[in-house]
Length: 189
Image 1 (cartoon, rainbow, N blue to C red):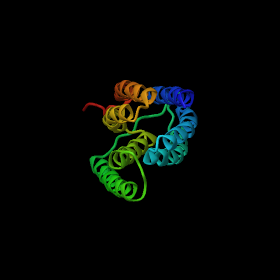
Image 2: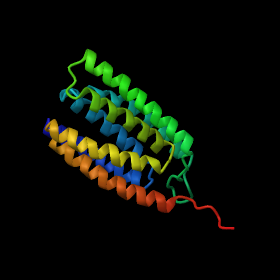
Image 3: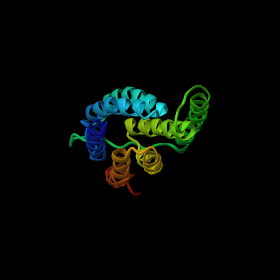
Image 4: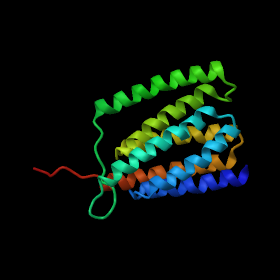
């Protein structure tokens, strides 16, 4: 499984790097990576993560479509603000989904880390939704989620994937800074 994990890691890193650069090619590369990681997570009995990959595939198609409709003159996606009330609503939905999925995985499967895996999956979906909608806040959420994922994958002995997620933390910080720089600033009076 190590070569499959390495291929998935390389595709994922490439996709996140392209996302940080606001390049629409991040979406088809991301789609390939989620297909590879679906297999990896089923093999590791991280079922919430496997389901997450399926959900990511749908959000990738959505994000790709939205980004292509919101490109700037330079061919990069334009950054969009995230209202606080909308952010709070999405985070509350993420929490509710984490609890429901965690309960289901704990009760009806042999999932290795049902509650943690479910929470990380739910909040990853929120971050992916925000990414597709071009919100800088996605990077903040990815930083938090990816730091926790590093620990989960070390615990599950998915060492290549844990290194990948450590790299994702770095890429998320780079993306955050790049997107903050690209964010339109209101004109001064």
